[in-house]
Length: 247
Image (tube, rainbow, N blue to C red; front, side, top):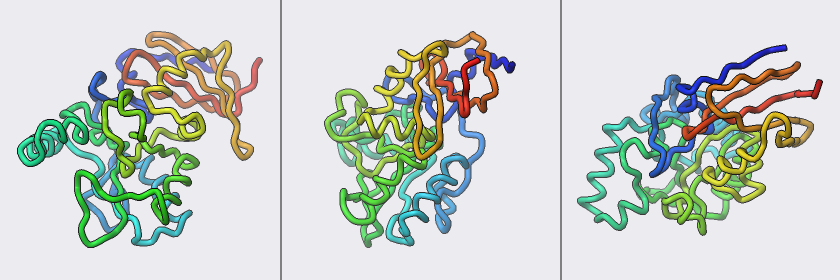
């Protein structure tokens, strides 16, 4: 029997943290690496980098897809926000640029991608629903990535539709989000309806997992399972058990 203690100060870390206008980032990435070979100045958390490269290899992207923006420091996000206010005005900026400490880019888990063309817009790069970009989009969930700001969900995410912005949340959460057409906001609330006594079971291509929510300052006991825990940045944790069997 293994016991895992879920301490409150750890709800702000992990691949499933929700960062938006309501919930600011309270942690700092600890293991950054270049997101794509040849783009040393664009980085992500290493766990996301590995999976991003697997997607690009899987679809044979070559140099057809390029990274535009990955991890940003608070200072960089502040400069981008202020420059957009000056150049594009408040309405545009509110739609496409998050306030400092409310940007997913500061987590190191988000990446903006573009179809490789001569002129790439930094704020709104072209990443169409066709060709190699659509191949990436379809393959992404199997490797832990989701399209973070889908069309029709602007009232939930608080951000305009951004087909170029992808977020690493980890497998199998990415698959569930994609299959149910959830945003991360919706998934965060959805998981709260599952507790260890009655978890969400998910399997894909022979890989099985059980997922549940646990509030902060609790202990969970795990039988014969590989356990992954992520804070949600709001009030608790998402626990994923691999190879879990009830006692």
